[in-house]
Image (tube, rainbow, N blue to C red):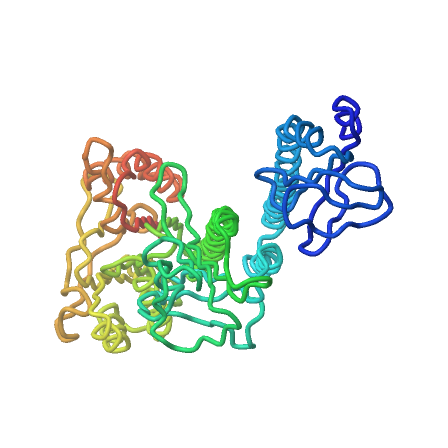
Length: 520
């Protein structure tokens, strides 16, 4: 281009750049020698003779040479060419700056893309964070870097990845620590940057020596905002000991801020994955607990040949406090027990398991029903007192040869004899619930029993008090009417019919529901 300008101007021209002592050729034909830096505008002796040198305005250290010894002509040519040369140099400088900016942005974009890939292919937060720390510190030139994540349970920032620290690193920092930069960044949810050359930047560090090689540091909050939800701070990324100058640039702040947003999403994703795994594990444990509790309840096959029996127990939660059991007592006699611990969930399930274990032992001793409940109360009195629980329980012994039912009822309201014809007869309580009264108050009653005709019906309050969407309860009348209509059928058919009618009433708050029907 300079050759064309020289041809138009009528004299060869060159562009030189001064290094302070000598000129270096920037554009134009090489004269074969390097002239000294001129002290000012004017004629100068060069390798090809005398020429005119003039500084280029707004282009520091650049000089335009017009290869002619005529000062007037050279000055006129220089004045015509200088605006064009200035424009060319400005364009070249802008291109250089743009190239440098593009190179810098390419590096940043490449880093952001790389981090997206890292977060996309790793589930482990610790693994991803360690890679991110390495990549970020490399791009911004920090010898030390760390990522800290908020631990809500302990109200602390816990280091999950670090680079350049001793083995202990930054460890754990309480979010209320007034001397911690990371804690302040987390609390205030803003970037804290310190530039030693700028007195307006943050310098509050409680005066302690942090062992940094430089004074500059950059701490950026890691925040996350779910769809439609408020943003919240989930951690902090810290950088210090900058390589190539003790100062983090505005570009560094923007880049780390963008990365922090990606890390925030990764932290939230890791938290949700961990929560989902815990919930899956809890669901599995609850399923196992439910299966275990159901296995504690005996199968109707236990009484095969002595009695027809059907029972359904549906806990309000995975486990519950309702229970039943039955056993052979010899000579055709059958013992039947049904109870309800005054609670539900795991605490009630534990008491229920204890009661079933003790009931099996005492029923096998062939004691009378009242003696069985007294022995049962003695065995679990301490646990009932400790847990402040009580239970209602019905225990009856059916003797087909004596055609008699003997029973003791500790506060259980839902027990009936359903005769072959006529209305149901309530088997009234003979004592308060176990855990609310002394063993001496438990009494026994006897009544005639029509073998092969009468039905024993026992249930818990969760069945009677179940309500439909209109708030109507299932009720005793509905239960007894359904059983009366089907009293000649097998107990299993009767129980199925009741549970089918109960289905629309199982809404809202639930309680354990148990029903047992037996014919001997």
